Image (cartoon, rainbow, N blue to C red):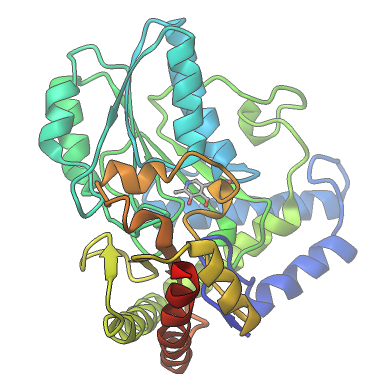
Length: 377
Ligand code: PLP
């Protein structure tokens, strides 16, 4: 089996699963209870919070654990925008993840002014486009660091500087779900989200970093966990798992990045030999995502043909793969209708190898002409 769908989710590291098992079977206590074993679980959670804060260069009381990247994004965007009672101005991107896109649509329906920026042909937001739509009283800017479908990398630090120059009071949310910890949190952002299952921690845990000057109301109210920001009994095993995965990732960061880049380059080298192939996201994209469009191929047909060889890939993002209406992100970057339907996302992790990339390239070279022949009939 070859798993090239790591932007959908990653396999947890073995030591992550081992530690989680301990926190499920032995140290299963509710972190809010008052006896010693519970207090110990609470302390373990706090240690992970301190570790995350150190990695992000923020204070520990600026780190909140959530259930996923979606929750972090929605808590942030609704928390800031709902204060304006439908009168605020939100700037976001046409290529943002559904958690931002759908929420900004909801806000627009409630009366908020929403500007959604298209991208350049490489999938990046153009600084001049942001400059054009910003207003002195813009409430919030939400832009992603790495695009989940194309791997395009936005220059968030520059975008954030532009936003703050024109609207010093605006709150900048950066969606770092596909970026962190491959990339560091960009400096200057007020809110930052990421998700454990994208870097070999389990599903069920995300982080929202909120700088202290941003007064966010709680989305989930109740028992007052996470300093009142996010009620609900903490998912201690998953939080512990996130801490372990993050530590291992950062210790091996450069090796992992080089490995993924090698896998990506090897695969692209092989795929380029196929006629009628187009790479989305440009050559400077993130090391773990390769989005490729094949003319005269239906992506799903190729995906399932690869599946028969036990090769697992994606078509766009896993969360939007059941949605109809064409690919919003490819449209935003101007991919032609001849290519867009044949788009496959190959996404890698530190667990992949160059040999796997060679094997996948070989299979795609074999399958694409067959599918084209079949399509023409
Ligand atoms: N933002 C981006 C860029 C993503 O790629 C994803 C998931 O793929 C999310 C947000 C949502 O994260 P989660 O699956 O943890 O809810």
